[in-house]
Image (cartoon, rainbow, N blue to C red; front, side, top):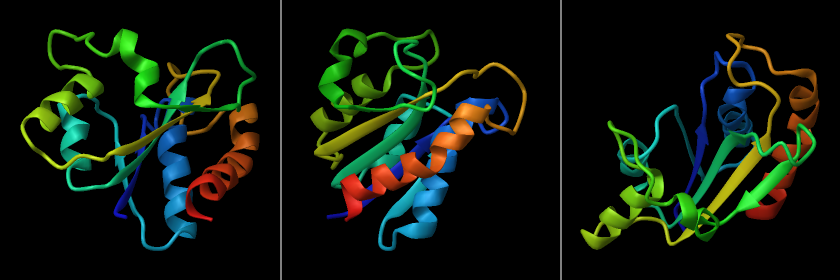
Length: 149
């Protein structure tokens, strides 16, 4: 099974870069898996996942319903309400994924979306807040255990 780990975020906006950092750590510890990074969405990341059987997407989230540093696991179906929301310059990831499927592109059948609860995403910094930084080892271990053990 051809697997892609895709870390999303912006590494110069504090906690927003957590998805990229977790993906980098997985790359160091798991052999035989492709790891990529992206700071975009919609069509731009769907191009990156074509040809894979499984996608593990990792990004920062702010639900404000969990402790900072908590790990959430989502499925594409969890985003049905936002699936067709668009901006004036791009379309959402799931809408783009549907288009690619209709056009016969080989996109992952299995998609897991990990959201890491973060504190701040709008401060220019290459450092994580303390709670996110402290949670990183356990988050990496959990994602590896759930997907590669």
